Length: 254
Length: 265
Image (cartoon, rainbow over the protein chains, first blue to last red):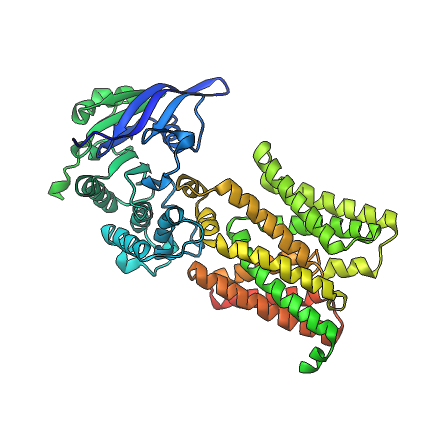
């Protein structure tokens, strides 16, 4: 069965800061091979939820299990590839080639005293091939376009051979053509590599064709197993509090 | 030129100086990329408190400086994590506070003399055999740590949060980095002086960054710049009887200006 192994098991998650409820009673499970998008208004708690899944923030109450283990007991972080929101907004002066960045994906997995093994080199090269950046390997990352940087950051996440990729608004600072290419790549990783995808987006029209489930987060969570139905304008308007028109991009026509 | 090596004190000064150039430039890469530049300056001033205590109490100032610099580094890290204070404000408070404490200790102890001057600005005459041994042994351990964890420290410098989510012990390594930087700074004040060591740590890396190359190359360029400025600066110090710290730092600043002009966009 495709959806057998639970990656995240979240139960009754609450997060309250200075008396203000950010997340309320969130519960869900994410299984291997899923392709899930998270949408919701700014300040609705999307990024907070992701940060909690990654152990960067502690919930006020509730429980998070990763691969069946409590968050504090979980050690195999290389199984999770994370691309943060500001990933493409790199410091242009930082001394790093594309290959330097992608190699970072192997550091935690190989341990302190270990040098770069043959497997490390292969995984780094493989990740660059998948993201179509092999020709950029010696380029300084600060000189790349937004779309190229985005692929570098995903290649870094892929280099550790993750079971799940978590991306927080990965299209920030990326042009339209690169965005389309990015969604095609995500779908390919999910279908061909069986990598679970969880990502936050505002591109609610573009995602409908590929995703399996849609989480809408606005303090509370609504989980929809039929994203196309969910993305009717009325639903989106309720979520964002404005008149919304979901534009369905048909990528195959491009 | 090589006549200066006929003197024992110059041999000692060069061994200590070259070793410090390696330590300062390698650690400087992480200091600059982690945005800790002002921290090196602050720890250098804290080390001065150790020097003052050592001079007044009759202990080896170098060892006391190492202890006080480490304590100061830990205090900064604690204040950063435990209170919602601006990092640069914490550094400014500790920097000026350390200098004030050092001056009071030295004044009360009546030790405001040439000995203190040499710790402020560096002196090639004052490097003893014991200093060289301390710099080489403790410095080697510091260098070993930096090289052992260089990949992890580089990753943390690039993106601390992503490094943390990859399973890297970010808090522990940050703690160790500031400890090692504190040790290196305290070791360096004999040759470069507490008021100038921050420059030897930061400027070679900033100059190397102008060449816009990968991390390994940046580290090697900064190492070369630091070694060159120490050799050139100490030679100037010998021939013109100037404080070694000042001549070393001016040498590296000239290199920085040249790097800036050569690599202008």
